[in-house]
Image 1 (spheres, rainbow, N blue to C red):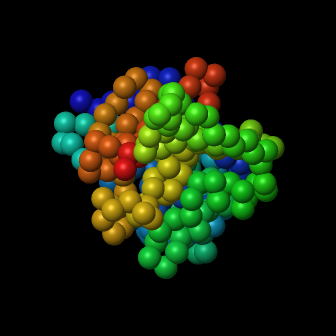
Image 2 (cartoon, rainbow, N blue to C red):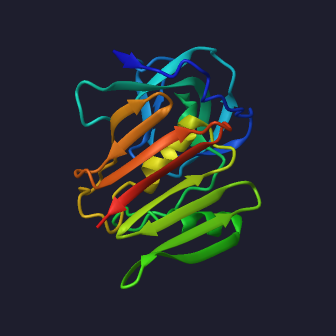
Length: 242
């Protein structure tokens, strides 16, 4: 059974003639026509600039299958075809893979920069709040460390560390659900410091709970999610226990 959000969470306004970046770390496929069975014209490397030629033609939804590590999960992102031009190639791609956001930096071994480094590099220094709160009483006192960074465009980072576990969420202002998915997978592509990820791998879907997608690495103590909050903001986050 294919799971698709009933509401239009992925709506975005791509503008004809504007330049966007490809955000699929595994390559944004350009098709000759508006179906995934059409001839493949090219696959764009992460960060490639493209120009949108027609963001309204044709008005046909495309379901982009999300990678899963369980056969019983068949989930698709709901989006639209968009006609683009890059170099001498003209064809169709999934709109969710394109973003106005400057791509994050990938090192030579394809490890991405951290979310907070990326946002501060592209948005400037945010308003930062960091504090340490004691938990418990003598003789054993644990501490909770909280980091909160708010950026001028509405993006934010919220992070908490407690008893060896990190948990937090990130919001990138203006990003649709589809764009957030591709940004999320880019940030977690070959994540530096996480020993469970194989070279060139990407976190995979393990569970769907309403408008919340849950991803994981290979152990239960490492998890990630994308969700739409009650106020409509799309966020991605996760937890990691040592």
